[in-house]
Length: 123
Length: 424
Image 1 (cartoon, one colour):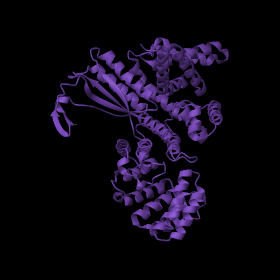
Image 2 (spheres, chains in turn yellow, green):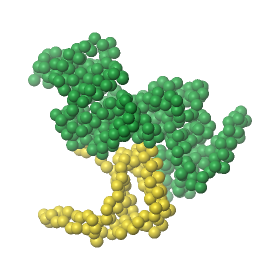
Image 3 (cartoon, each protein chain N blue to C red):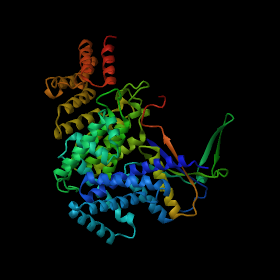
């Protein structure tokens, strides 16, 4: 089962403390060694992004930052695990590191299953 | 308000997840200490039972792995204290625990990492030790490193649970009786490694193309093999064949969604919608292959097979496939690992690169090969080449023969369809 974990927080994200970066690096190494860590990336601030919206039959492009959004996506990771609970446990550890090393930070990590590698979606 | 019963159920599921993640590391570390896989597994189970008792009240600890390991070690000491017969082991274990406490680094995580990696690798080599038969190695590896229950293994291999349980028990006894040391074999690494890789690839293939039953594939088994392979690549990063096997599995797994049609029927490589190939896994596979190549040396069988799989993965359409390269890779494979099956595959590649008659000439040379006597792919390939050459009656006979030889329901249906298609 493949899961995408999506971290969301209010902008600006600020610079994470070096201790957090190091701890996350270790967690990633551990998950890699467990054979479950497939890929990860951080996203640039929304001020460098844009939104393309289809609404009322019209397509419009709005440049960032996304001022109206309370929390925006800051990054994602992809896990391949045996169950949703395993994905949750890796995510819990990820958030635990934030709690320890960046006490002021608040945010949410969404855990979503990706529909790949199995029977075709129409089954 | 959160219902307490629901919360307890959540904790149980969380414990199960922690268990899946921590169990191989626990068993590996404990085996190093007590030098007995069976005892290590029991101690790990004891720790799980303790967690199931405690955590629903206390909550999951911050470092659940460390908690489980400390609990298991205490159980080990308890057991040894109770059992005078094992006094020597007790002294050894006590000694080891003391040393560990004395040398405990300020950052337990940092100190642990390499040791844990070595323990896991040691456990893989133990579970795949040549003193065990293949079936025993597979069962023990899935049990100890995959964390699968005997029931799960039984279901995956379509065999009775008692059979699996017996295999695991016997395997553990065999290891104890043979006094197999718990170690990473430095001297004979390549040789012992091939025994591990064989088990991993066997599990992968069991999931990829089930040899029996109605399920044409059991992705979860392949997924577990892929996970074990990825772990192995982290533990033995300087071994090109490990990366070769991972590359091969990643690329083959990338075709999972494309391999079956709406009714579950198999779709052959050239008929697959390449847009359904999983590009994430292909990218990982090509990266693993590049890692193997960068280590250098003459490519081994897994690197060569991965390179072949990569030829297909890189081709956006079947016509773009670099068949001459695949032929040369099969020639290299035939030199280091000659087998009639490799020859048959080489014949297919030759037919694609240089025409069906060139391929058929090679296949005809294999018809008398005793090792391929009951192998359904021989008549299947021969039938395909005859069909391409317009020799339809002969092709039909070959497809029907192939259908009678395969044990897989789906594959038999496909072959009978191809036989029927020669009449149209």
